[in-house]
Amino acid sequence: MLARLARLGVALAIGADAVVLISPARATDTVDTLAADPDRLREIQKWCSQDWGGTGDALCKMASQARRKRFMGNGRTPYTPHPVEIFPSQREGSPQGGAAKPQPAMPNTK
Image 1: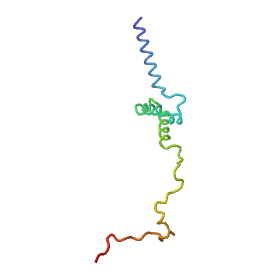
Image 2: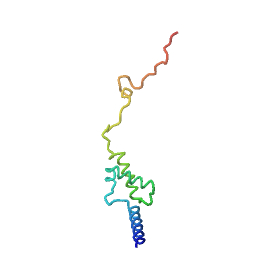
Image 3: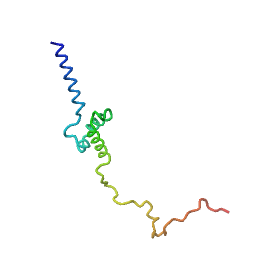
Image 4: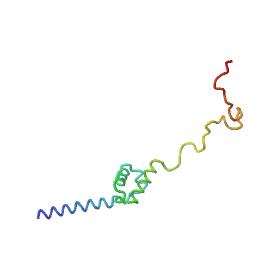
C-alpha cells in the first residue's frame, strides 16, 4: 500500500513538472504585459536561454520583442525633432563667409 502511494506521488510530481515545462506561457502573456513586468520577462528569458524549443518559439519571440520595446521605447523621441547644426558658423551666408581660413601652426619669428 505504501509503495503504491509512493509510486503515485512520484507519477504526480513528474506529471506536474511536465505540465510546467511544456506550457510555461500564461494566457495573459503578450509583448505589452511582458514589457510591463520585468520579473516575468527575466524569468521567460532565462527559460529561453536554457531551452528555446521546450519553452516555445512564440513565447521566446514575444520575450525578445518585449525586451526590445523596453529598451527602445515606442519609437518616438522627446528630444530634438530636427537635425542639430554642429557648427552653425560654418554654413554659407554666415558673417564669416563660409569655411574658416586655416591658421598658421606657429607664428613666423624671423
